[in-house]
Length: 631
Image 1 (cartoon, rainbow, N blue to C red):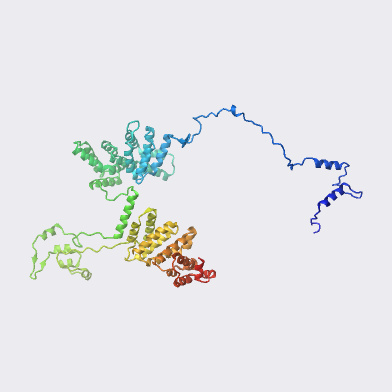
Image 2 (image 1 turned 135 degrees about the vertical axis):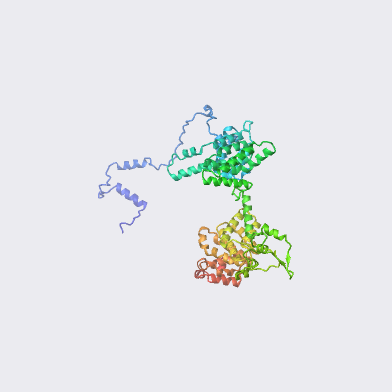
């Protein structure tokens, strides 16, 4: 240990040690490895001492002269800029806005983006943006736009009417002082119409080996061709195609070929009503019966094909077309078409109101049985027969028709003995022609589980910018205050809305509270529904908190508002799910609710919090008042 210790020497001792080394005594014998026995060692030491230090020299030096490599400024020439090849900013040129015209390719890309966003709701705005792009600058650009529109109409046949209307608007624009859009559009439509679908299918599936993929590609081409038929029909309805061209198309399709006949039915279904109206108008008003005669020839051919068609599928399709014509071109089933958001909202509101009313359709007058026949009516013209007691005798036929053939009175009228069950169902008739009183309309309501889903959809629409009066009315029609099951339905509305907003922001929580408190105040939801509706939110609160950290604060706010408005007492938490009371920090939750109400802390509230506190809560806070004081 002593050898490992560091021995510290002063500067004088070190100097003396060196002097002793230099002037070594005769008895000084250093180790051979370190012995310095040169005679001139003193001169060497002085030389080393006076030499420049390596790496540590800090003596000041004169500044180094900088050698200029660039020529004088007077001899420099300005940089020559090639205006054709240099990079230019698109938005600024010399500090001013650039007016750089986009190429045709850029315009077509922008037009495709607009067409992809086009809908009935955004039609007015986006159609004007399409025009403002400068699509009418030249025929090449206009042709590209037409190809895009036709292609979109093929793959989106439900928007065929919208694309036809867009074409009608674009047809007013001129290129080089001429209106060429309509001519170019019809040329493109004719080109698509005359394409051989079978050849196109073979070309598409030539290099495909998977049978399912081959079938898919073939079906896709056929679907696009049917979409083209619908687009042509919509163009005709927008006065973009003449009736002569339409009749030519129909005659061309009216062949003994399954695919062609299917296209014929699609085209006729779309435009048949308008075709007949125009053909009749030309015959009666303009004295031009040619179109009407040609159309009638088409119908005669259709009638023959319904009997000798290529397949039963086509026969039924053509028969449906004839039925549609016979019904005044009004389809038996309402087809789903593209609609605006306003139309969808109105339809949903109408359906909800009808569902809330739940009225039964009225029955025709004339009793429970069948209506009387013409023979029965003739019997009414006869004079009534009065018996000795002054009662009017009613003919058996009329009596049976009035009260129903299967009833006990009808059986008695024809001499049959009614059964006991029939007698119990029989009603007394003060007169011969008594009519059944219509049953009182009964309301039907959605199931409680449906109420939960409907309430979520309703709240999402309201959060976007809906009307609170409509929202409250919809909840009223959904719950049916006072009717059977209204408490369960109201509970599901509260449950669904609460679970929805627990994962949202504070703004949505406030909107939900506005609707809920109004429904409770105006007796749209019963107070008994509150405790039932809060069961699931309380039970699953800890799980919801994992993904939504603010869920507990939101639920505290909701419950506090309900307690503050005296719609429910704090003691309802004593009946909450067992998992919440044991694992959900129920005591702390109740204390936060009490503090959020801002009211006076009563002994009853303290007692509720005390009962909800677990052993862990009491280990931290001895009493409920201590817990309240810590918040």
